[in-house]
Length: 166
Image (cartoon, rainbow, N blue to C red; front, side, top):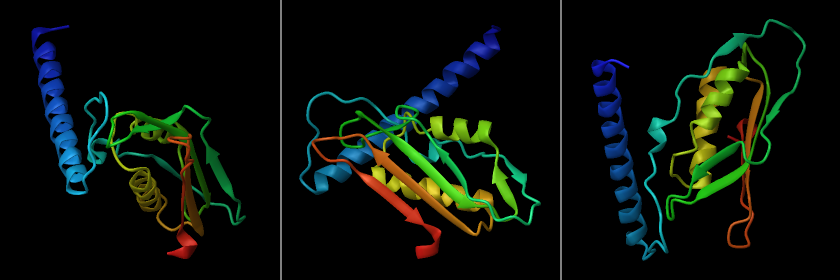
């Protein structure tokens, strides 16, 4: 690795650290407004804006209206709790009937993995993913995004956004 590459990596790490520090501080300030204090240890987490923005798409040229479903296995999709910094593991399910495009799977996988270090409410993450996919797919007949998170505090959280109900 050249000296220049080493400097660029260190600069990127510094930028990432500042983003995480700012976002974590903002989350703590937000919680404090409602009297919520973090318990125990927690780490820094990144804001949703740092997620991968690019998901490739391919043209769908068939007249057949097929239902496409992508579903992660438990452990493949996770983000961080904005109150504790602890991981929220869950299953992400994407269902749609293609309009002019379908999603390219490798870039979708990288997009899903990009949530791992991001701290946001489970409901917000579902909304971000729905909005991102709707934008990429352009005009699907319908799109449903569901996140079902593992039990936390005895509660299973399932969030669903269906374009037909919007």
